[in-house]
Structure formats: C-alpha cells, structure tokens
Image 1 (cartoon, each protein chain N blue to C red):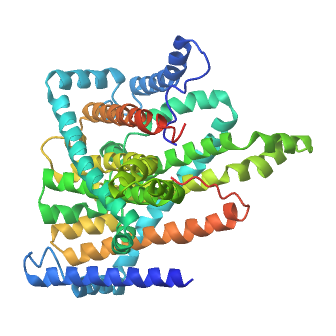
Image 2 (image 1 turned 120 degrees about the vertical axis):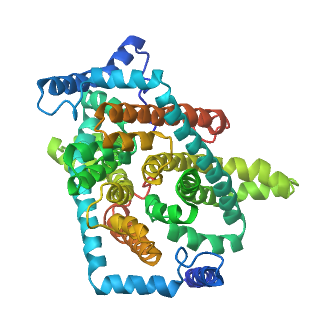
Image 3 (image 1 turned 180 degrees about the vertical axis):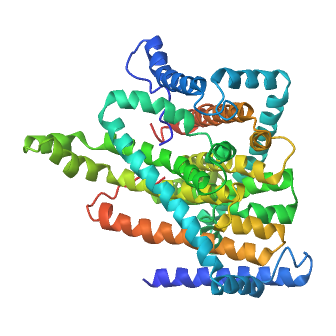
Length: 267
Length: 260
C-alpha cells in the first residue's frame, strides 16, 4: 500500500516530464505558502517564509546541530528496531512452530497490541528513567508487535505440501527450517519488519519529546517551541520527512527486491 | 467449536499464569511498590476512577477528539481518494504530496500545531486528522483503481449510467479497501490521540491521565488507564470494524479484503 512511489515508473515517459510532474504540486504548495507568509496574515514568527526556514536549516546544518540531532534519532531508531526485529522474529517463529509457545504468547500479544505505544511511555519512564534507555526500549517494544504477528502468520502460512515434500525428500529439521520454512515465511516477515519500522518511526518522534533525551529531532522540535523558533521546527519536520521517505524507499524496497522478488515469491 | 473453546481455555490459563507471575513479582519487593503496584491496587484505582465518574469523563473527551478527527479525515480522504482513482490529473497532483507528507509522524506536528492553535482540543483533533487522513486516502485510491474493469464494462453494457456505475459498481467494488483504510485510520488515530493528549496538555483525556498520574507516581491509576485504552482500542477493532466488515464486504462476497 505504501509503495505509492514518487516515481510510479510509467511507460517510457521522458525523465524530465516525470520529474516535472512530481515537482509541480510542491511548487504550487510552496508558492501558496510563500504568498500567505509574505502577505503578513499571520505573525511572521509563527508563519515564516520558506527563505527563513531554509536559512534556519542551513545555519543549523553548518553548525553541526541538525546532523547531530538527526544522527541520534537514526541511531535510536536503528537500535530499537534491531532489538524488535531479533526478538519479534524469534518469538513469531516459535509461535508458528510450537503449539505451546503459541498458547502462551498469543493471548499476551493480542492484549498488548491494541494499546497505543505512547500510552506505555510514562510507565517506561518510571521504570527505566528518563533518557535513551526508555526511548530505545519503548521503540523496540512497540515495533515488535507487528513483527511477531506477521512472522507467526507467515510461518503458519507455509504450505503444508512444501513441508511434506521436503520431508519426503529427506530433509532434516535444520534444513527444513532453513530451506523451506524461512523462505516461505519471508514475504510475511518482511511485511512485518516494514510495518514494525514504520511503527517505530511514528512512535520515536513522540518518545523523544516525552523522554527528555539530550539530542534527537523530536526533542529539537519540542524544544524550539519554547523559544517560538518556528523556522527551526519546520526545518526539523522537513528533515523528519526526508528520513522517513528514505527509510521507505531505500531500505525496504531494496530489501524486497533482493530477496522475495528475486526468489519469485511475489512479482 | 470444541477447538475454539479449547483455545479460550488455554488463553485464560495463560493470562491467569501471567497475572500470578506479575503479582508474585510485585509482592516480592524486588521493585519499588510505587513503581509496580499489585493487581488489586490497580483494580481498586480503576474502580475508584469509574465510581467518581472521572474515568468516564476522560474516556468521553478522548473519544470526542478521536471521532471528530477521524470524521474529518473520512470527509476529506474519501472524496479525494475517489477523485484520485478516477482522474489522472488529481492523482498526479495529490500523490507526490501525500507520499512526501505520509512519512512524517503525526506527533512531529504537535509542537507546530500548539504554536498555531494553542493548547487544547484543536491540536489533538488536527493531529488525529493528520494521522488518519493518509491511510484513508491511499486505501480509497487503491480500491477505486482495483475495481475489476470487467465489472465496469459489464455494467456499462447493461446500460448503467455514470451515476449507477459509481454507486452500484465502483463504491461496492472499492469497499474492501475503504474498510481496510478505515481500520488503519482508526488505529493510527488512536495512537495519535494518546500522544497528542500527553504533549498538548489539556485537562481531560486518557493520555493526559496517564501522563499526569506519572507526576504523582500514581502507578495504579496509570495502569488502570492503560487497561481502559487497550479495552477501547480492542473493542473498536473487533466489534465496530468486525461487524462493519461482516455487514458489507463479507455479505457481498468480496472476501479478498486486503489486510493491512
């Protein structure tokens, strides 16, 4: 659903036309923004012109502040997501393969999942203190749910006949797992990872605002509010958008192309 | 049926074990009792909050915000999504904007909205709107485009005019996707409202209670509110959307509903 792609590789269309078509809406919105900002309908402090925002962006980037914030956010996201991926896939596979594990974990997961991740935030803050520990753990905890669910579904969805034919051809458990179950479940696992990463990303910005971490884009935006620095805030939002877009386009579409599509699981 | 009963029994056993384990941990004194209250304390806090009516008031203001924002998102997302699916020009204009805005977590806008609109309901409603809009928009768009062209031609051949085509073919054809979109939209909205309530402090709302209770180390109340939030989310997911699905898509025999 999310692969609505900026470039929906249309039939042999000249490149410049494609770029123009994607850029055009932004130009229109930018122009409207600029006109409203310059007309002075709203106080310029609250509705800065694009030039001011770009200047703030440039200033902060040169000073190394913005890259530092962005780097810390990305590291936190990576750590939390890695934890969630390892734990989530492991739990999901265990649930899919063993009846006992399914009975134990499924009720707990079903109860934990519908609670919005941020609702846990104050609890985590009390338990693990302000700062990085809480932020990373919360991100991991929240993004683990879709990963567990999808991995579990994927393992269960592996066709019985594949398993049986592999067994009939003399595959032992290890080979069965490595060559049949894992590849069979992979499309689901990747979906889970993708949803988990998106979830982690949505939660992380909020967590950074609440957990009072020293660096991080969420914190930067939230902190800038105190000083009415709307230009800094909007520059931060723009960076968040770019990182989010990069996650979607670069990380996941690549990963999918290299694995599932190449094995012919989905086209 | 017996399979189902057995799975309920197992779930109950698991939950009872988990509760007992938690209770043992809480009573063991390894953790500060203020941080890990026993279950009777949590239940007591929940009962007290329900009895004096505060929990109901919090729930109501949260529901008001989430449903208001969700309604706005539907009112905006559904027509735009349909237009995108029907007209190339609209698609070309809206799609790049949507793809660029979608990866911005709705909560990132909270500080911006606070400065623009002040603390209070408006911020929460707008954040909910932002969170719910994109799933609604993109699923509707996908749904309208996924309507089987054969159905369109068949209906056209049988003499359906534009109007009938739209109401009798396109809307039902796109409905599995639209309902999926609604579901995702609600889930996102539910997450967003809790976060917005924590950040844009108002006086009421389930998110605000949790955050406020933290200041006073009132962990039982935090856990009680968490339970209420979970219960409402679960209820919406199962009862509201489940029955919506049964009343429409399943009844029309279009079970290839895409799962988000």
